[in-house]
Every structure is written in structure tokens, then in C-alpha cells.
Image 1 (cartoon, rainbow, N blue to C red):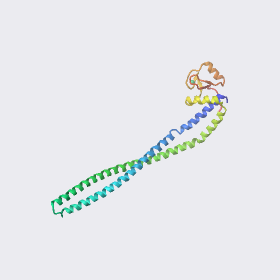
Image 2: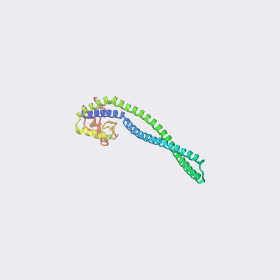
Image 3: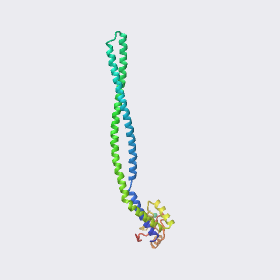
Image 4: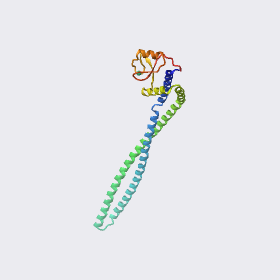
Length: 238
Ligand SMILES: [Zn+2]
């Protein structure tokens, strides 16, 4: 193989490697994103569960307090029948009224807490089922990614070995030129002449230059896009 043929061969290998890598597509990214979203959701679930426990404790405290108030009020109301003076009666009534007001406040607080408890329970149910769904989705995506990597692993390593062999036959300046043009031109550094024009950028190739490329293996670059040109009819041994 002459230099041009070596470069064309190298480009075939590089294109095949690129296709294999593209086959994995956005799967690694999707797996990453899903993992991040799931850990955020898990943090939210843990914090909602902690708050729910607090709310339940506070509700029980409130209920104990309310029961104590009710017992106290009942006791004071019994005492009303035993008092002998108006002053004593008024004093008891004042205390009963105060306790009733306190009881109202506590019952209101218990109601608020119960509402919060309902909201938290509902939110937790939604989050947990979302988490469960995501966990299954993540499992599927991870498996798919592993399969795709496994499927192409052999081919990928064969191509990489082949590339090393081909690269050995190309001198450093030309390899550097190939890499540079390939990097700048979307993976295609070597292009055929098509209808007297560059197969990459379609710039017209002067007929004198075309004749030179057609006759020999001289390295010629397109004046416009700097891609390496070859005569399309050239047989490329594989
Ligand atoms: Zn060109």
C-alpha cells in the first residue's frame, strides 16, 4: 500500500471506531442523569420522613395536653357546684375560660399538624413510587449500556489493534497532518475527487492538479479545506 492507501485505510478504521462509540450514544449520559435525579429524590424522601416523625410526635403531645385541659376543665366545672361565694364562682369561671381558650389553641395546632401530616404522607407516596419507577428505569438503562459495550468490545479492540498496525506504516508528519485535518473536518481527512471537485468541500480542482493526483501517489491537499485528495478510481486493498 502506498501512503494514500494507508491513509484511506486508517480513515476507514477510524470511522468504524467512531461508529462503535456513537452506538453507545447518550446512554452513559442518561445513566448519569438518572442517578443524580434519584439521589436528589432520596434526599427529599429522607427529609420528608424525618419531618413526618416529628409531626406525629407533636400531634401525640398536643393530644395529651388537650386531654389534660379537658380533665382540668371538668374538674373545675364540678367545683362550681360547691362554691359558696360569687367571688369564688367568678374566679373558677375565669380559670375555666382561660383553659378553654388554651384548649382551642391546642386543637387548632393539632389540626394544622394533621394537615401537614396528610400532605407529607401524600408527597412521600408520590416520591416513593417515582423513585421505584426510576430505579427500574435505571436498571434497564444500565443493563442496555453494559450489553452495548459488551457487544462491541471485541470489534472495538480488533479495530484498535489494526489501527496501531496501520499507523506504524505512516510517517509522523503525514500522520500528524491526517490527525489535524481529521480533527478540523468532522472525521474526514482523505476525500476523493468527485466531478473535478474536492469530495469534501466541493471546491473545483484545477485540471493540472487533478491529472497529477490521478497519475501518482503524491500527497495533495485541497486548497480550500486542506483535506488530502485522492483519485476515486484508485483501488484500495483491504
Ligand atoms: Zn476541499
